[in-house]
Image (tube, rainbow, N blue to C red; front, side, top):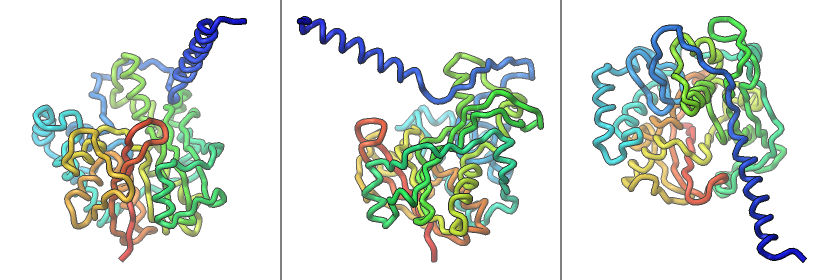
Amino acid sequence: MPKPWLCFLTFLVATLSTILLFSSHGPFQPTFEIKHGLGHPSPIISPTHLIKDEENRVALSFGRQISHQLSKPTSQVKEQQAARAKRAYPNTLSYQDALCNGRRYWALIQAGNPNPPHVTQGDFDNSGWTLNEGYPKVIDDDLKTPIAKLGISSNTADIYRAAAQQFSSFTNQNGQHQDEPSGGQYLQIYIPTSGTIIASENISPLQNIVTYLRDSGQPPLTAAQKLDLIPPLQRWSDVVWFVWAQKAGGAVGDLRYIFRDNVINNDTKGVIDQVFRIPSYSFDLPWPGKTFDVATTDNGKALLGTPHGAGIAWMLADHKDVLGERGLKVTCFTGDGFFQPGTQYFMLFELTRG
């Protein structure tokens, strides 16, 4: 008969082996090594800042390039960056910066984008995207109560859970063939009968490559390399709207609810903490949480100005012709989280009428 300590040791070794096996299978990672020589390396574009510098006016990780009229002077940007170390939330986007972003985004939503993108199936395919619909139709336990209270359907026949994955070769922004995909992925739950999108797991092509290079100790991308390695169709707002329009069909203009499921971005979490005036990462307010109107409150605009609000702002601005005049409310609440134990942050962006 085996000795008890030997059985326990065998179990422990098997358990550790399983953990190591699964921990090695993280997000899709590019396998290329960046070779410089295309000019001086440019700073990494952080997906958590509206503006990194005057030369790289980029949206938060889910938006698009900011036009000149939405930019800020370089001196103002540098002052904001210098002030980050002096404030109560030094490692996150400040409330004032988020509010500044949100005011611009709200103005953009009201005006609408005069030159919105018109994504076709050819654009989707040529940029190396495929739609993986092989996921179980599972909704996070922490969202089941909000969904029931709001009257959103949880019938599996009404649910599409699909990931747009940039896992294939593509035609890059220079019109050249690129064999190495970026590994970007946008996984959402679409419920067209209830006008709902649940944003589950999202990492943009740029964000995935930047993260890979940083973690592997390689130099950051140059501007020229971005054109080579990032597909033309790359932003959350464009890719997700394209899939939503396919799934919703005639109900495409009935979009009402966009959930941000299990927020892990430190800038977004930091702004939520600042909205509620609490210590970092201590937000704890289960559903129904607290709701802020974007049009009439600074808190609502600050939440719109986070990384998790930017893509939604662009989606509304780009497709105002379909969605019409809409108000916008943001609800913040907490739950236990699907992937991580303990309190997790959630957001709901509600498009209102009238």
